[in-house]
Length: 293
Length: 215
Image 1: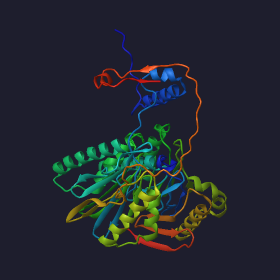
Image 2: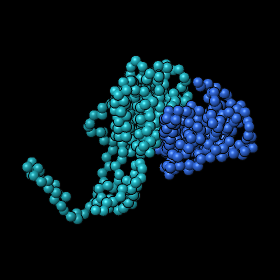
Image 3: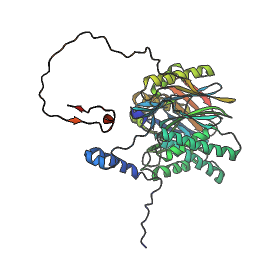
Image 4: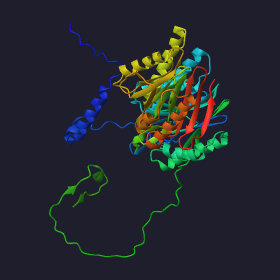
């Protein structure tokens, strides 16, 4: 019995990525008939959180902030999506990038942290969650499009990390990620100082997210804030509704507008053909004569 | 709608260097990591400990080098327990090289492994892209190193004291930061010897020095 030998290459095989690219090129360049015949004329677009997410350490904990817009290409898919995900009681994670990826990665790591907590009998540490996220994303070599800001408080104090899709980690007292990160970082770089108190940190986070909401097309709607301290978490969703739909300014009543001027001109036309339009059943039932041209 | 820098990998553009002296090594690096044209972290620490006495300076892809350094650190910690003594710098460099060489097709990482051990004192091992391992009295790497090779060749002399080495490394990295767009921030410096590992941060422009002593 002949058996095909499996190719022995270590790690993951990303051949399907090449296949998808080839299909896209083929269908994109093909004729309309080909595209209609094959069911995939274009690859479905992933729902992305365009996003502004930030984190800021203050002298009693960590503040995380996020906007609430999720986009699918140029359309807003969700005006009020939640981007601050629960990892454990004192660890939360904001996610930017592909919405499905951030949601699933954070849920996966949250489960692993819960099991780890039960098996060690200790409260989870932020560096543990950071290491799990980092190893997971590195294993997938950037194909899982999740850019995360993970922050929390553990026995060592407040921690804040950013994890990029390829699996690199940065540690800093203030962090921004997502398409609106430049706008938010500008706010932090001009106003951050060490040893902020909670009120100042929340104000800074709020202003950074607003900068992203108003200056980046991929971010919008509301500001969500999560304040994590040793003694508790305040998950404020929404913290601020920055884009309420406006109230209608006036009601314009229907009715005939005033006629300002009348201009009559004869239009000469020849009748070339006559066609009777008949509305099946309904018009006859109502006793109306069908229209004729 | 998304800018190119949100989808590009984070790279340590970098200037890294290491110099041996009699009794230890001095290592230095800049502090910039970039993603496309955006600086993702201006305060990155590229001097990563592998053991208490052996550090590695990282350049190339941030994700690759962080993952590899974690792995090597774990491996050396295990070796320290199983061998009953601190690993030698040569051993650490070989562990690092075997990973970088065997996965050279899938990695973008170049490192300098430097440290102190009882057998041979201060040693610097350079592992550029591709996984070559070579011991050198002075090594520099990263995109910024190309701008300072002339300066290094002219100014380096064997037998410098550790203070002279520190000034040499700080000045060289600062010069590279000035000229290389992918290097920036501060110059991070570390001295590794028998007794103490000290770190200092030099601001590239003003040479303002902040010294922190580690235990």
